Length: 351
Image (cartoon, rainbow, N blue to C red; front, side, top):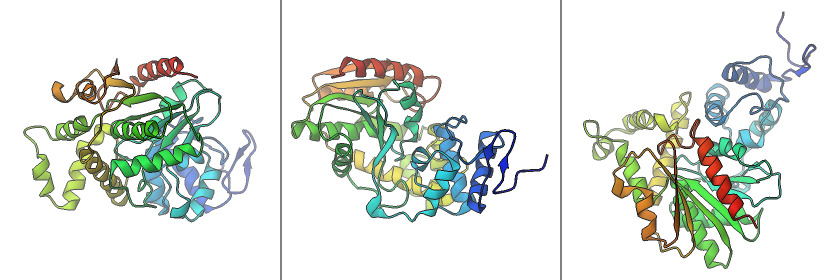
């Protein structure tokens, strides 16, 4: 059978074929990545089997093969080739950029807002959103700088202020349910402080394997004894630092394997910026309740674990142990348990 030409429709399965060069390039990337063909330009990436990890690889391949930059959350907003091509053709205006990423907007239950981890994007939450109740709205809050459209913010306080403002655009007042994994948990904590200070009801603050001291310990754990230490790494050239970071962070999949040096350097810059922000953050005591989800497989010394850190800041901390370690609890197969525990906590605080 001859391949379908751009502009034609494949008659057997009614696949809408690519109609221009950009749609053709995107179709070839999708077919190679998903291992499925033909793919119509109106078919949904996630319904075809795409997931958060594939989405990161998709981002890298688009940059590499088209030279065009796709916003990190672009595949969430535009999950078809047709819509994605339209997004890529549009000029990105920093004034139009928003931290808010609608992942699941249907339903009448209390919305959940999850804040990005150190890598800055919210694609890691796609599976979690799908495992929660279909009537549970789910929004991600991504980091300025994740697309290269804006510069990263320098402090936890600046990020929390922008994220609260973005959240209020879809939910002007409480009760609120917010949370975050890794760096996102620290940012959610500061957001909760600000919401409560303004008189809002924070019904759920879900901190997923996160902490200020814990973040420092996690970074240190990436540089075990017998290998290049943190201080030694700082003495390396920028290209050597990037290469070493890619190798050490591979289990967390912060940088897609397909990422070229430009995209990898952008993610590295954003990660180090976010880590500096967290390490310079001075958390104040919290008078509400913290719901902590801690990985059962520790990779740091026990004294740095979140279950020991947060009770120093809050008198009401509810701890849920979930399978996996800091890097894997948000991935299959462990994420099923995290989603079940989180869903029960959300139901318990439902207005």
